[in-house]
Length: 107
Length: 501
Image 1 (cartoon, rainbow over the protein chains, first blue to last red):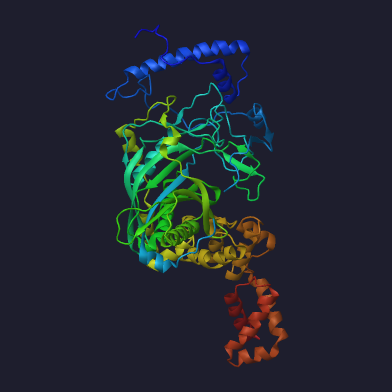
Image 2: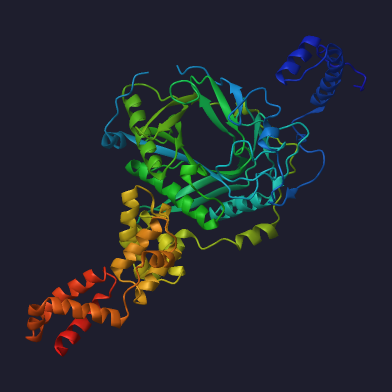
């Protein structure tokens, strides 16, 4: 199979990109929906090709670079202030991130 | 669901064999989080110990804390585990806002330590060996505050508030192999295990091990199988078990609850249950998710860990004297019986006494202060002995002052009261309260002469050979000096002065 081969499954639709964007809380313009639909198609196609050659005797690759033992010393580094940390949150209360109801009533 | 009728405990263990599995989470006391340089201090203002990495912001990348891996390996070695020569972190994916990344970085099928054991000594001196399945590294989650609804619990809450200070704090999960064959003693074994593990972790100096602050947490898996069977029953996992006593109570409650369900012909539901400290009961939480639900996969942003033999060997050489060996040594040095030692350990006094001895006090005096007067004070205040606002060094100083004759035992207690009341160290309290023993013979003689002059009849008796009559004069002098005189010295002076006249 060559790189030019189209992905085996159907193309990503604009609606699917819009849905993903909503889930990821990304503001995507109309034009961008088309751009990303095309790009996501290419990515999915590439991943699908890997699936074709994967076999039981080939261990899945988790790391592309053969590194190990990459550590940092146990030293403090400056982080964010509370204000900075909460600046991107849609809702805030008492210095905390406010999130919608997680579970419904107990049965 | 209506509350089940509980079965009498004796009947439970007559009909069933309990199987335990204990999962203990311990927060490491490293300076920084597992994958970023944020502080890990308990009790900071919400969301002030966070950075782009632990908030899961785009473009941030985690890096493994070297000290945390070292602590994990030391814990593994102390638990007689094999240290894995190579292993990766994994992403545990789930949709729940306590991790802003939407996954928790954890070790899945490649834990750093496997296949060890811990020996427990029960109250009667018998030893139970608990197998350790694994110890793996992960990160703690943020703290959720559920607002609205009746109970403050997640069910029925209107919304939740998240503080991510704790998100990313290094966490070690230690999982036992199934613990079988403990019968009626299962609750006691569960408690003894968590106690032994806590002492071990404290000796390793890798964690604060404060169950009340959540730096040591226990989940108790309990199942029952018919007596004599070897096929495990369905288990439940009880969470929110926040004290050693609760570990024992939770296991015992689950045994009686499950027995009631089984004896009524029902089946135990595999689920997470929530322990209620107030009632000592458990209630159902969420149904247990299976491992597949988490869609684990190797964390691509973190390089695998491959501890060299040299590093493991070097860490091995840093292991301290184990708590049980330590106790044996203390017992011999202080000349204690098994029972005396156990009382000190159970009272939480052993380390305090040792620290007092280390500060220069004789062990007998140090023991006496901590197990009697100070234990009473802690009891009165309803707090743990080590929560009393007095340091072992203060107690050692008081003992020193008594030995030097500068304080009587009675005054010493007043000094300790002053320290407990926040008036400063022993020397400051002595100074401010004016508690020094009146050792100036001049002042004492004046007080003795005054007392003798006030009670001429007693003086006659003393002169007549009734030495015990001196007690009345000694009492008067002690009263006049507000108890700040050394009674023995006063008595000597009374006899001298009475004879002179």
